[in-house]
Image 1: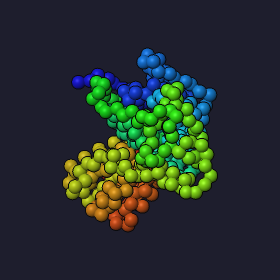
Image 2 (image 1 turned 60 degrees about the vertical axis):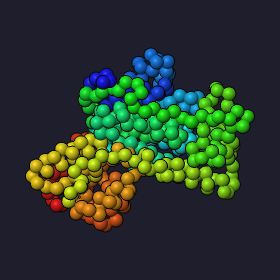
Image 3 (image 1 turned 135 degrees about the horizontal axis):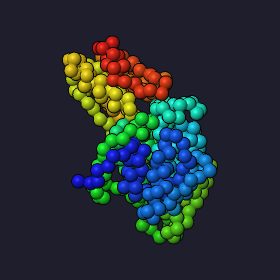
Image 4 (image 1 turned 180 degrees about the horizontal axis):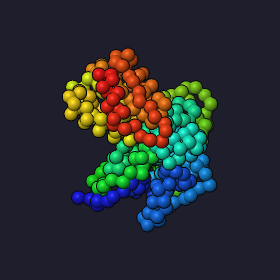
Length: 376
């Protein structure tokens, strides 16, 4: 058995990052994510890592990209307005294929909103926050133990597919304290980036003949190459010609969309015979699980689909559920965002109804149970 600890979600995220091999954090404090920075400021120097508090969130995201290029697994944590400020550099990391993990502890908004309350209204920003076409991986854990393991998985996916990965959970999950087990080293798999085997003189950082995920050299290990936010050729220098730009952006999409089976993860509860399904993540998923248990005690056939990977969206799974149930209920702490994706996948096969709340309180199980009885 590993170490047993009582941790809040933000602390579990930081512990998971260290377990995954993170040795660099750059950030700017912002409620409700600040505990991650506080933990990393104390912990990283103990293991030979580095912590930087930057002047703002833009600089923090830029520093994370630099840290990763220099060979470190890198993390930043933020919330609401800070996540908005990071978007340009997240897009830069996507195009330049720099692995890194961005935590967004979601709170109310827009603007300063409700800093101390939960929200889920950044979920579309996780997907569409930057400009241009690029793949997005976003994970949505709901329990403190799950935050630990999903943080490890976030780093693994980032390194494996050479892309930024977003962790998104709400303030309640981030601040909730639960008993967790931190496994001994080696129990959970830890993935490191694939490095080139050729000599530096032959290295091409974006050589698509090596596959959809080219090997990545660390700076300061003898390899020198050009990194730019312009569309670029295999050598990293800008190109402004077809077909390279088109085919390279298709490759970026393909390395995520073509590996959905490896990336998309979810939990299903009592869906086999369900007549009503609930699609919920984060703290809303926790409330939904309690509502399912209460409904089942009353003989109501209801089940829960809880995505741990929200992007790429589990299209196939939601379409399958929609073909078997009378209705899908979508509780979310926004005025209706992820419900649009559920409707897109359901394609009218069943009713899709939402429960929306943005007043700083969670959607409780009684609200969900009442909606279940309404639509069944």
